Amino acid sequence: MSFDLKSLVAARMGENYELHSQHLNPTLVQVQRTIGFDRVYVRAKGAYLYDAEGNDYLDFLSGYSVFNVGRNHPVVTQALRDALDLDLPNMVQMDCSLMSGLLGEALLKKTPAHLDAVFFCNSGTEAVEGALKFARAATGRPRIVSLHGSYHGLSYGSLSVTGSESFQEGFGPFLADTEFVRLGDLNALQATLAMGDVAALIVEPVQGKGVNYPLDDYFQRAQALCRKYGTLLICDEVQTGLGRTGKWFAFQHWDLEPDIVTMAKTLSGGYVPCGAIVTRRSIYQRTFSRLDRCVVHSSTFGRNNLAMTCALATLTVLEDEKLVENSAAMGELLMTCLRRLQAKHPFIKEVRGKGLMIAIEFHEPPQFKGKLAWRLMHKIDESLFPQLVVVPMLSKHRILTQVAGHHMDVIKILPPLTIGRVEVDRFVRALDETLTECTSLSGPIMELAINTAKVQFGGRPNAQRPRANGKNGRPAVNGHKNGHANGHGVNGNGHTNGHAKNGHAVTAERK
Ligand code: PMP
Image (cartoon, helix red, strand yellow):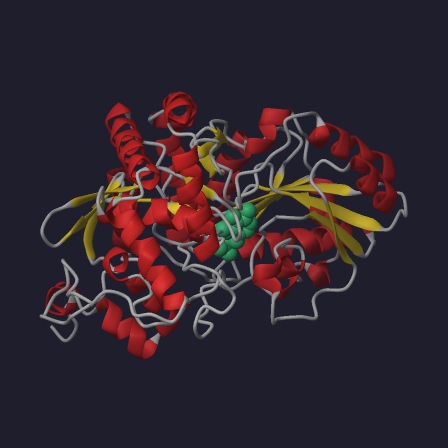
């Protein structure tokens, strides 16, 4: 056989980081090596990743909420195999495929009745791009309003409505006629909508960055203002949709009636990218308004059979295994356990979230000892503290988590919706231990903090040692032992910035 994937993988597994350094993004590799995230995972199942030695890693990141049904779910895997075996005609383009029709039917059964038309695309960003175009076409208005702190994607349209400077830096100018208001500020929203030229307000019902959401009736009032001034409401459910927050869609927590909903991530089943825009038929038809505009918004791969298959199988698994209900139940359990930890660890300011989208926010504790540790860490680097939690959670406890955003003392967890008590207990125990080390100014946490300080103030970090699970005898750096291994700091965008002159710690993620 000229191409044998299994042999190729067996022969080259372990070269991952060298290959990426050479051919892809060495900056990313540098970050991963620095924080000790340069693991080689060789297998994945459900809520777990495995290395070559068979160690299990609990995945509380879920590929940024791609794996709501867990990794390599047998039903989705089998569906993909079946789709391949059927030799289905794929992307004929000048036809209407069965699979996209079936997925349209299945998805619209999950959304409220007023949303009765669907458009398929390849990613969350693409879904947002399409939603903005649909809104402009439907209203004939130019402006789009978004919220500060939001994340909607990184292409020009979606980035223009992403309210995070860290992502926009260096890429301007952006789409004209976009504007940001603060979550909760109804006066500002009213003032801008009253101008009568706003096509849409786009919101994440729960913001991915920082896991922020209103505790009051802000969303309902914002929706009422949209109605009053003829503005469409877009709910970006790319991260929050399909059970993540304990309901099928997060807008259901506030009984909202959005005009357009975007989704992606979990629709892929963790295999084949798939995005969707769901909207009212009346809005949809304003884009595809004439025969010569029947494909005026489209994408070559948008309705491909493998993506449609994955999404169909995934919707079935979410339903059959009652994963939306499990997300609500396990989310409750986790938050109860974490709030108990809060009583023990004054570093914890707040535990918030919906379903299995949970943030743990830290702050300076009132006690002398904790205060000292907190101040020291923030003096070294204002973004360091959550890193000092996330790093040992992986290196010591083999649990993958993420920092929730730039300049935030927040970590975020997004476990697969399949988790049970075992996974909840493992996470809570590990966090308990990690925070105890933070307070006592001991252990790997302080080692990382001290090494970071040494690098930033001109010293040298401890000597490098080979990565525990490296292969082929190639040395690699383990983050918690070596701090900023190459003597370069990395700012919050994951870009190297020389000698950490911006004072930002390395950071794992913030989408
Ligand atoms: N919108 C939201 C709310 C998201 O969380 C993301 C991804 N993190 C996107 C849009 C962009 O999706 P993608 O990465 O699939 O393009």
